[in-house]
Image (cartoon, rainbow, N blue to C red):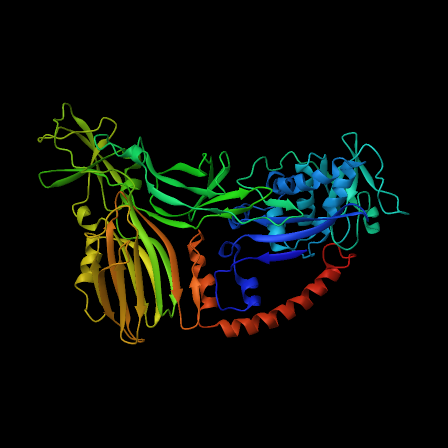
Length: 637
């Protein structure tokens, strides 16, 4: 079995380091070729398999917890591996004993995956990782067999040390091709006879074969009612012919459905906050399924849409919460084309502005009292969208654009007269609501029927986090890029700071919505230089911040008002003295950036050497574990 990861985006690192430390989403499709026989000794075939990083990441974010035997069925994913089943079935369906031939061909494929003791894995993970123990290999084989319509179960062996698992395949007759001289093993469950299918690669096991040591074990049959019913994508595969690469693009723009400025909208009520996700698949076929993956720190979602006759797709993405989102789209491919992922767009979605009005010396908002604290808290204080450690970077660059992501126009309403008393509330600085007696305004004001006026703290308007900023931070020679929403006080502090330690650039007045801009920054012995370029590559603004290795400095670029806006961010690339790194934008666990980046900055030589030593150590350790671990009687591969 051949394993190949194409086009790694981490450059100038040793292969050992890349394989051992690079997560799947930082590489292109993972491809594998498996040889097998559909008719033993006569017909040899190859199955070419390609897995998109998005599908691998999806299952990596799914729970693989096993609290009872029935939970194993949750990891069976027939739809995800359906293309492999179809290719094998095309060869075996017309043969005698076709179901048995199919099961034996699947076992041949699974036996080519090296054995390794690990936690239970989803079949997609086992294929990409190119290893698995008896559980993971059985889950893969079961998924392929179930995808082809075979009646299968899992068999869990207990009462022996270590335990074991394999697959049970229903046949109405004794297996014809099992190993000669061995009596085939079966289990009866629900009045059906299931024959054992051993998935570990120690021998050329066929349907009905079983390791002799399992004869004394207790066997529990696990039915597959809990198997996954649908998958966001599929593995693409072809028979005997390599897959042709495909591609998919992604674009994000303002959705026009919510821009009626006369309609009062609330992100916690009737409001529809939306952006349009669109792009094209090549080859341009209609009716192809496209998956849209949206991840944040707390959730992982996917949506599906289909292509039109031009290969185009479109989806309106609705959201209610401010925060950082990672969005990419994927096409699964077909029997001719490998699947493809788009690039990942990082979206910093600001909160929706509150509907405000003033009367005398007081400031009010309109909100639903039950949700007012949540709504206002997102507008209050500093909001950190992303922080990326860059190490001792020499330079970096990225692209961004601004789109509307909420209401448009002014939220101050002063056109109508209040006709009746309303229930008031007061919001203190701890975001606690205190009910006030009904009042009547003495000034004309338009009050939405489903909202109540809430009195704000006196200094709220001065502390709202209303300004999107990119902040390049130098902490004594270690650099980071931060995306923040700052309030007026923080911006004022930067502006009034020591000119030797900070600089401030207000680019918001020159930046237009729905236009892409590029920012480059470089570090010399004496200064940080940051440049802003428009879509034509023309330098529009620049700033210089003095720096040295013993100082802490920051360069702040203000780009937009935070409320009702979204910043779309892509193509962050960092260069050091000898290494160019295109940073991952799709990692929803932002706290992992340190772990991802530190190995590539300043310590590559050490890590390559260390990895070699560690690899030797763990190889010895795994050899010892193999003697005592799961499936101990097998020869490990």
